[in-house]
Image 1 (tube, helix red, strand yellow):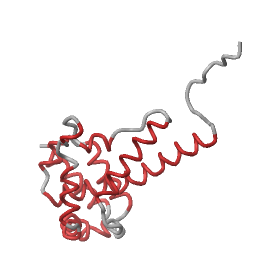
Image 2 (cartoon, helix red, strand yellow):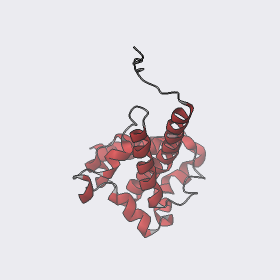
Image 3 (tube, helix red, strand yellow):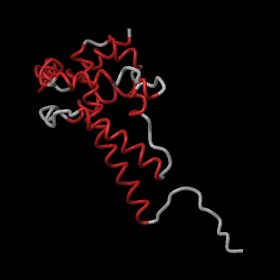
Length: 166
């Protein structure tokens, strides 16, 4: 049932953007054709448990919001960024698509349950995951920079420690 709703949501996106409707209907197939096999495998690996991570699905970690600004948060965000960079997504995957549509694909990948994402046809699954990874990479870069700038300028956000100058 959810898979149908996801496909219906993608179809609704096409109806709201009539100037690219024909392009939009074929976009998932075209995107999949442009993805090298190793990238497709990497995207699928995000949906399956990793033996080294205590049975967690990597996509769960990539979806997680950063914690409070700290060195640990910076390391976690850089680890996520490294994971996404290792996918080696081609740079121009979404250049010919309206940013709002890419954002819609990203939102669908961010909220759907893992088992629902697995059930999609490969073209739709790869499109949703590629959009998520593409936009999430930019978000992680932004978060990492904020952490670095906050720590380098001494603007620690959070509760202040009391002075022990008594």
